[in-house]
Image 1 (tube, one colour):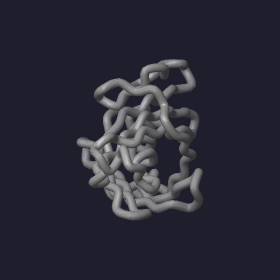
Image 2 (cartoon, one colour):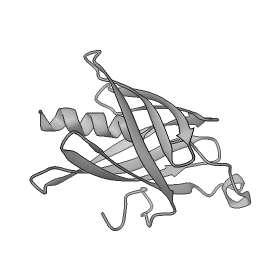
Image 3 (tube, one colour):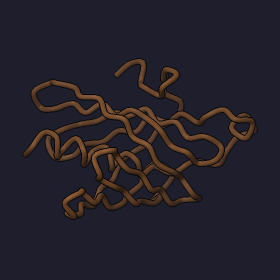
Image 4 (cartoon, helix red, strand yellow):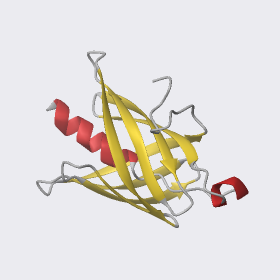
Length: 137
């Protein structure tokens, strides 16, 4: 499979995680930090994702190939309740929703129109830098 194709699928997959209920500090403007993990085909990924009080989503995805190479990609999107929309600058887009507190699913649409169903897992408060990139990836 094309390396870039797998990376783009992963990026859109990661954008499906919904925003949890906001704490008082999130309401005051602090972003919520999450770690998203999963696999897609023969690659695994880890992503630092930040979501602000208005539902704006941004993050960095680290895609680890079978060869051991790790590529980083940026993502952006929006959360509205349990619905997520996101896109990568290449033209791929994602629409997703909560399945449970630890899992989301959705549909990735590639710029060529191909659609893929994706799922991922979530945990809270990873260590990220000011750009929402994972400190340890």
